[in-house]
Length: 354
Image (cartoon, rainbow, N blue to C red):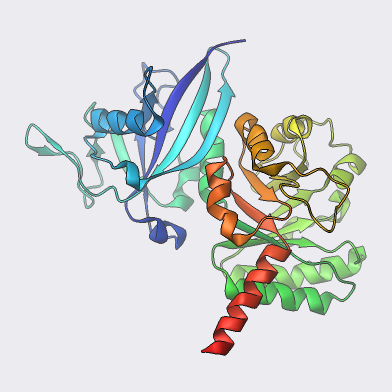
């Protein structure tokens, strides 16, 4: 097995975390020199972690050397860790978000960083550019960076609809979730509905989700899926098996649609990583819906995230208060049914008390 080159990577934002969550921020990317590994491609700044360095210290050093950026560890937060094998090299990308990037050093009395200048140059002469999240797809990155871009585009929360044989109940529940939460996607899980009812409900929810700035992920058999009214598809273990995707290497939906899969162990993770964009890892805690399933606990969740090359969501008994815990254990965010419904009840109670 090749030895991993440990690399600290900084996704640099021009503002605070709350502005990033609201979509009011830009990200700094740099172009690699032609003579470098993966030369000519764009990247998120960073470099090799030296022996004895913490990730934060390595990132502070690299960003100062490359950009003249004075960054604080208090403005850093882990984003994703990606083990990746190129034909000629294996790398472990330790990716951290770096917020409030507004103060930069000068070299030779030349301002390296000017937010109004469209032609930015780093200390090593590398071209730099500030981009919107939506513009990242316009730039060519190394293959290992796909998961970073996905992590930047994915939300911190995925609400899964509560099953009912009445589509109107599900519609009302989703509308209430979108009203009470921002920066959240909806996964439509409704096993009690037949194909026609499910499709009709999904068509309605697709418009509602987009009006709210959200996305709709279908959770259904592959043969039900309709690209025109969906932003992506989630495949449960059952639907993966029924579609023959438990051992497949070919993506079943278009590349511009999000694909997620259920994951309970490292074997399922490896299958998912060949075709999916992210996974829902469960159960983190014991649940009333699946009392026979052994809980992973946060330690078990981390075993999976440590091996993951794609973003991982924590599912199964998690609560809103554990969002930060999820990130600390390598997760992208939390997913669930009851955690968002319970939070909505608290919001409603507080509003009624005013």
